[in-house]
Amino acid sequence: MRLPNLPLLILLLALAACATQDRSLRHQSLGEQGGRGLPATLLVIAPDVRVSEISAGGVVEEVPDWTRQANGHLRASLDSIARELEVRTLDPPRLPADQQEMLDQHMALYDLVAGNAFRAGGDGDPAWAHKKRDFDYTLGPGLAFLPDQSGADAALFIVGADHISSGGRKAAMVFGAVFGVIIPGGVSYLTAGVVDLKSGDLLWLNYASNPATDLRQAKDADALLRQVFSTYPGRAGREDGR
Image 1 (tube, helix red, strand yellow):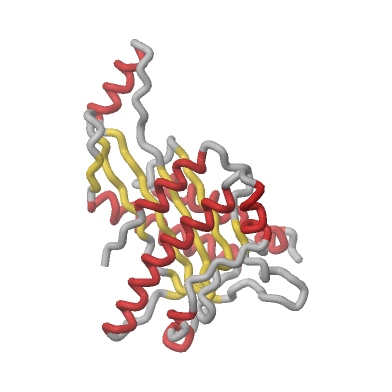
Image 2 (cartoon, rainbow, N blue to C red):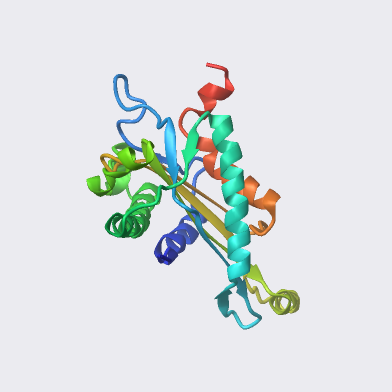
């Protein structure tokens, strides 16, 4: 089932211009003494990253073959990153129709809740500062059946988009620049989030964007996903050998 990720991606575009170096968000209980630890096993929800072509006139149209290519690269990159982080990854089990529908609904819910979380975390208004400091967003316990079904402690959601400029649009960009007219090109976006399956708590969220990245290329997909995971909790400790 294809679910809309446009609201979250529009928000990330707005935040990209004012984002600080560390844009990640962590649940308030993560890392506290005697509190919650990092997930040892992640159930990987199939990446929902859509690749589209922008025509000379600005029409955006998804290209299914490009989308499949990019998601394949990202899934392979994730396996490599997970090994480095010493995190076990699992694919979702085959579910009964009612449970699959519940998972689909929570994928859409994740899109909305993550969008609200990023909005609060990236807003410079002091009134929202507590939402980043005391980060406690949740999807609710609707996926509590999945740990027994899958053997995973938490689920990983990856959402994104890549807009590729067509040859005609690239020519228009060059022509426009001669006369001082800026025609925007394509930009790649990725966001990843880890959700505790029993409680529904969002444990960690981060995103990255790059106007020079082409997610159809394996090396570009890997580089952007690694940028997203550069702030994954526990990375520094593992790299330091602790």
